[in-house]
Length: 591
Image 1 (tube, one colour):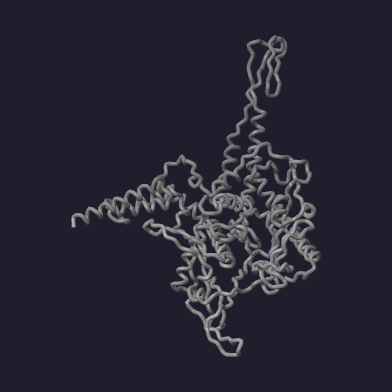
Image 2 (tube, rainbow, N blue to C red; image 1 turned 30 degrees about the vertical axis):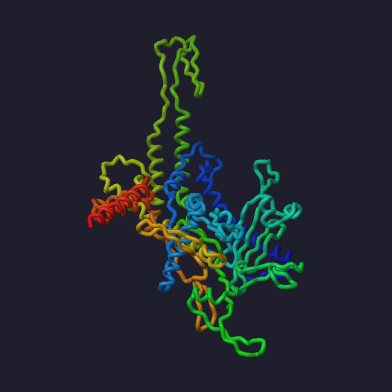
């Protein structure tokens, strides 16, 4: 995509026009989002009618919430072409990604992600490198955000992030945060676009809107442009390229000459031969001329290019794929007819019941006053009629057919999504066996399998982006820990130089990023913990772990339970380790 060069005002006007046009083309999409969220929250609106429903039975909320899962897919990485070094790197990638899962609030983000996906038809994940983070000598780390689809403004007519030339993300932040992050004065921050504050009657609040544009240049490099209102906050044509402030006089990053400083792009770094030899095992001798003109052969620092990702740092998780749609298909859209019909039926039931009453009948000359608190109506008898004719008229309607119809519509909605009573945990009055019920639950889960696969796909793409960011910007090795099959803790590290390779044909170094990402289905998070505990116990009883009477078998069992987060499993692991050690000592004494 071609953009204006150098002129700051023209570039801001260009991206603002691009943003406004993209938002205008997505107006129908945002309207569908508003409609879906309103339905999820229990809107009384009736399509095609100015009259609102008297009451709402919110089956949309119930069906969406019954699908919410707390499982967070565990990462899996494999080398596209096998070698021992690549296999070792793949394991370190998995450990790095697991550490990112543990450090970031993925439980909270997953909770938002699940609801966004089922309500809107998709969710948006955004990963960025934060160089301000520093811990134990490790500078920089990845930050991950789960965003509402409302906050993504896509390129019109393109239905895949990978195929887009540009897209926008919209954030809301405070004035103080934007002043600190972009070093703005109070006068400059007034140029930012203020958010509408409903709590102060429409007055401007302390929040401003921030727009980030990711775009590709003519060479396919990813650029980033950030603006708010009439203020440009950041403009990086090559977003992933390294930059450094150097002195214009001496060309050094840190100097005392007092010269004017400028920001330069740095595409290569110099590495010592020892580093190259340690990580690649392959160093090419250099030939150079000395000052006297003699030829000198030896190993000198070599230039190695920095790794540059080619992807937008954005991932879209779809609910279920839809034709001609950037996001997936919303569950709210598919059960909206049933939700609307149930609202009408429930409103009719309520109207009937409100009109229902027991109306007393009294003689016209009765001295007692009867007050009907519902309608205030009293039937009075004519003169001369017997007082024995006191009575009542019961106008209670029969709503049984309405209730049956409402339940029938509810069953229709569940069948559309593929949810059964057993899947929701609702007791069934039928006399079916436990095996039959389990089979029905499995069949219902099978219908929802495509949604789970879309979640796995999104996490795999997110893991690739996280890996690429660490490969590009993590200069220091990242310390990692992991447990082996025996529960022993080991240390490891992720170092980007482990991925450095030398292309003998091209005569240059490159970073090997050819890895396949997926989801580890054996990670434990894909199953309910109670089911996993029962499965481990069944394996112990069946003898698949060994003789159940042997301490080593019980140790393996409790190690499996510890990985499944069984309560107090750690204490049992330590006990059986000590017991095995005592048994070994007794055996040694007997010898």
